[in-house]
Length: 473
Image (cartoon, rainbow, N blue to C red; front, side, top):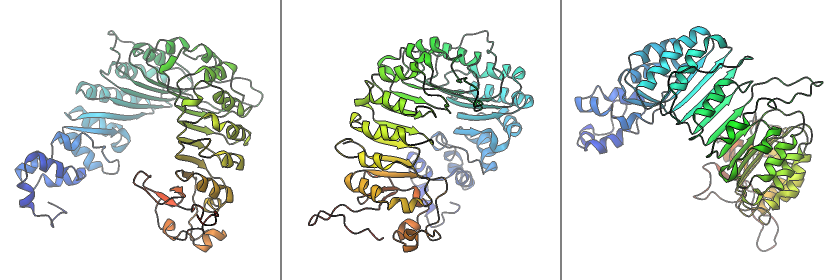
């Protein structure tokens, strides 16, 4: 085989078809096409469905994308930006390749005219299960044909719509009412428009995850408007019996949402100038089965949602919590005091440098199941922050904990002027591509650890009960 001369081809070709297909599965798409040139048997086997149904066509290899759409029986994912919408639409017009996941970006009326038959053709082949469509400055008046095709896709499981337009998308007119099939609907738009309402109504019987996000501009300081207050689809959400994951803007009408015991995941996202409305806080308190919560904290009263969550019926069951705030640590101080109310917590994330009060509060007594602590570090050097006594202490006191640092621009350890980087205490870490994006701990990597687990602290010395010397790798 091309690029694999060291392997005896005769031995490979002596394998049964199913075993040979299992071997070929290790090859990337380009190599599969090369192998087809070697013999008739490989010509056919290299187009086996099992080799292609997991393939996401590489964006950087346009030739492979063209060949796959012409020859492969199926692929997992295609993105319109790879070839450009016009070239992709031309190829798809004559393809028999079944595409499971499709991403399409439209930014003009001509793009709508290209994307409409593209999606229609792939839908007609069967197998299209996930669809991402982004409308960037697309004239709303021209979008109806594309919306109608999106609405008409049969057996679609996940639909992600992103709209950057000030006008509402119209309702998709269709002669035949579509059978419900969606389990996930993600809708990002400045308004909760008629097309969203149609999708929620049509797929209410099957929907399990609904993500309603806003594309909006920060209101002027003098404005008291709270985005999302007037057009929240409360009635439609109440008609979804299997709703188990909801993402939306905090809304006063949430107090009337009858999510019941099915709701397991809740996310409040977006930029909130004002504090959470009373209805949103009440909804948090009365939720009974939440296991995953993500909250973008508001500028005013950021501790309100944290306190409501600590008082909620879900607090003893909560397993994963992530809080995002860039305006003070008051909410994190409140969280620190409330940690014992979350005994089932396995993952804790804060999108800021955690205050010392929170680091002190993280303990096996308060959080016996905690194994992951995600933080954002805005210090000059994240490596130096790792050596902060409070950070070292939280790792030593929680021997099973992994600390994950999210940094926007990690320093190059050998070039950083801080004393820790100049000392070179973690030479192996400096050689890793992931560097400061590793999972830090006070234990050596174990079988159930993340792949990039890296020990930066040592447990206390048994004889003197003091921390051992800093590990030098």
